[in-house]
Image (cartoon, rainbow, N blue to C red):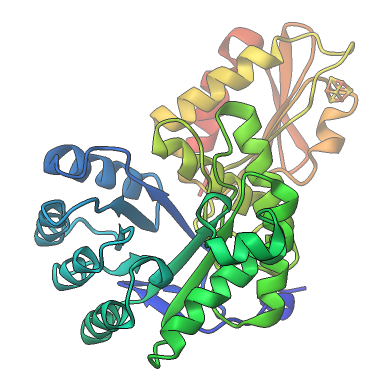
Length: 359
Ligand code: SF4
C-alpha cells in the first residue's frame, strides 16, 4: 500500500523551498548548537547539516543582534531553509522575518498582548513565512498545568491548540505544530490527539532524549510509531551530540519505514552466531567506514553481509550484492547467485570494487 493512502492528510505549508504536509516528503530538521552570534561557526555547521541530508535548519535567535546571522546566511545562499527559534520577544520574530528566514518557531501565547501577536502575524504574512508552535512538557501555560495537574498528553495538545487559536483569531493558519515530551508514550498520545483534532502539519520529536543508544531508541520508537500510523510531516531527532548525528538517525528512521526520498545504501547483516567463522563484526565496521569515505553510501543498492553460507545467501536473497562467510573466506553473491569465493583479508576491497561497478 502506498504510504500516502493511509497518511493523515494535513494542510501544506512552505518553509522556503521545502513543503511540509499533504503528500510532501517527510522532511528532516535539526538545530545548530553554535553561538548564533558567531556567524562563521553557524554558517559552517548549517552547511554540514545540509550536506548530510538536513532539509531544514533551525537556529536560535536569542536577541536582536543574532538576527544579523540569519541575514548573512541568507546573503551567502546557504542552500537550506532556515527557521528562527524565538522565545518571548516578538521584536526578534519581526526582525527575523524581515531578515529573510523561512519559518519562525514561536509560541504566540508567550509573547504578551494581542498587539504583539498581531505584529508577528503581519510580518509573517508580509514575507509569506509560516509559524511553528512548539509545545513541550516544560513550557506549559500555568492555566493548562493547573487544569491537568501535570504535562499529560491532553495538556500538551490543549496548549498547542490554544496557541494555534490565538493565530487563527488573527486569520493566520500558516502553522505547523509540535508537541514534544521526553516521555515517549506522552509524545505519541499527544500527537494522536492533534492528528484527530486539526489538519495542521505535525513536527515530530522526542525532546531531551539523551545521548547514544538511549536517544536513538526513544526517538525511533516515538517518531517511528507515529510515522507508521501515517502521522507526522517533518521531524527532528534530539540527541546530546553533534547535530549531524541527528540527521543520520532521522534518515535511518525514515529508511527503516521506506519513507526516505533520499534512497541510499541499505546494509543488512546477520547478528552472528556459532556458525560464524569470519570476523563479521570487524568486517562490517570496516565496510561502513569505507563506503562513507568513498561516498558510496548514496548508491541505492541493498548490500548483505552474512556470517555463513548456510543461511547467508538465502537470508539475503533480496540483496543486490553481498557476502556469506566461510572459514577464512566468503562467497560473493549478486541477487542471491554466487559469483566467486574471496579471501577474508581482501573481502572488503573486492566487495567495494564490485559495488563501484554497480549502477
Ligand atoms: S547467517 Fe549464518 S552466521 Fe549469521 S546468524 Fe544466520 S546462521 Fe548464524
